[in-house]
Amino acid sequence: EPEVTQTPSHQVTQMGQEVILRCVPISNHLYFYWYRQILGQKVEFLVSFYNNEISEKSEIFDDQFSVERPDGSNFTLKIRSTKLEDSAMYFCASTRTGAARGYTFGSGTRLTVV
Amino acid sequence: QQPVQSPQAVILREGEDAVINCSSSKALYSVHWYRQKHGEAPVFLMILLKGGEQKGHDKISASFNEKKQQSSLYLTASQLSYSGTYFCGTQTNFGNEKLTFGTGTRLTIIP
Image 1 (cartoon, chains in turn green, red):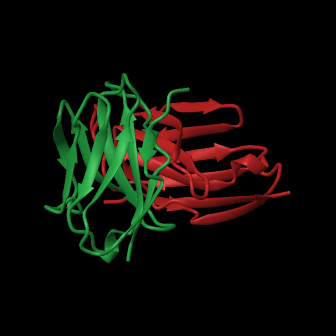
Image 2 (image 1 turned 45 degrees about the vertical axis):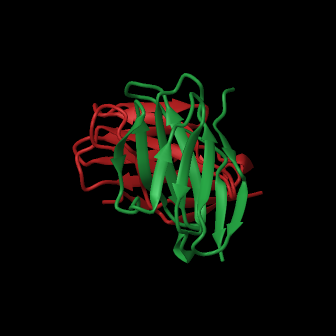
């Protein structure tokens, strides 16, 4: 069964450093999303991406965040200057076009900011 | 605004049944259900669309009451593998807009 792949699985970074989280969505999916989950808490929407541009973003997704699809397969989330409160599990998800489609989530990147 | 799920947590013995509810204050187009095991990604279970349909596979089914903007997930004859946190995710429009996830329900099945 096709998978969404995320790397790295765990990243530890110092406060103020830049991090790039990587995702390879399922090849025939056209809609991509980033969500985050602070330990044991709710799953929060960050940003959605379609046709090489952001289609929606949440208030969490401020100027410190950016997304890119640098080639035909990768989808990245960059945090320019990490804060302690950015520590969370970050999930990438993708779905095919049209309604009535479930999301396929990647296995996540655990980001720890120290 | 985040959908509210109830109960927050439930403990069952193997073979017992459970119902998990998801309520939204907004008019919904669709409700998704996902299960997340500890340390893993959410896994899609099913989707229900506006129209009040009921869906199911195996011993897990769900309903969507459009008038009340509520969905319920039914787990019958629970198995150990059903343990995890269940999230509903809602959409207010047709298409591929973001999912807004509910508060989550932790389900523990004991032998």
